[in-house]
Length: 106
Image (cartoon, rainbow, N blue to C red):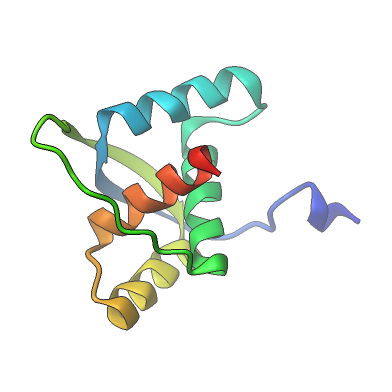
C-alpha cells in the first residue's frame, strides 16, 4: 500500500541541469499545490519520462532562456536518463526539459 504514496529510500546524487526558465517556474508553482519540493517535482517528471519513454521533441526558440539548477536526483533517475540518452541519442539536457514539459502539458 505505501508504495502508492511514497518512494523507497534511494541514494541521491547532486547534479546540475540547464532548465528552461518557463519550465522551472512551472515546477515552483507546483510546490505551492503539492506537498513536495522542487527536487521532488523534478524527480517525478524524470521518473515518468523514464517509464513512458514519451520523448516528444519540440522546437526551441531563440528567446528560450536556460539556467543551471542543482538538484538531488535519485540514482535510478540518473541511470534511466543515461539509458534514454544512449537509446535515442537525445542529450541529457534535452531529456530533462522534455520530462518537465511532458509533465505539465499532459
